[in-house]
Image 1: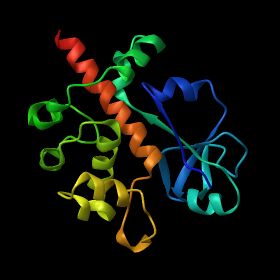
Image 2 (image 1 turned 135 degrees about the horizontal axis):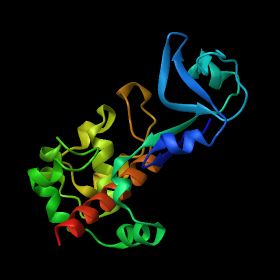
Image 3 (image 1 turned 180 degrees about the vertical axis):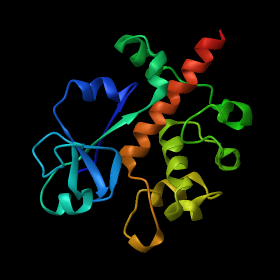
Image 4 (image 1 turned 45 degrees about the vertical axis):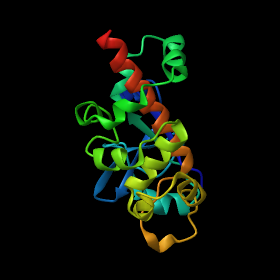
Length: 186
């Protein structure tokens, strides 16, 4: 089953316009971001699914995660977003702890960033993957080795690993955030 995440500056605005059922982790706990856009058994008072998302997936229901990604609040429009995405960031800023601590997903990981020194979206995506337990062993290795092994998920016992599609998307979002910060400083 595919895993679909959609980023919003404010997910509540999108959800207010969409008929949906909130996913649940279990019968006792609501999922933080998951929704169903089709009819699934749910509590009519709370609007929350009465079956956990893993069981729901086994039954063929398709969950979509609507994520709040606050960096988008400063993006003016689609052209501005495309400009921010297409502008090469100042990669050296990823070696400065104060700057890195402003960035989502990589704040607190200055040690890995300094060791790996990414200079492309693909390398930044690999760093995001190395933050997860299954790929920590790659920290400090040569980029050729990293890029050969980082997206191999054959060892399912190694722990949680980031999918390439998610890692690339988040790396691009970090580039957008880096460029927004620099734009605001100028």
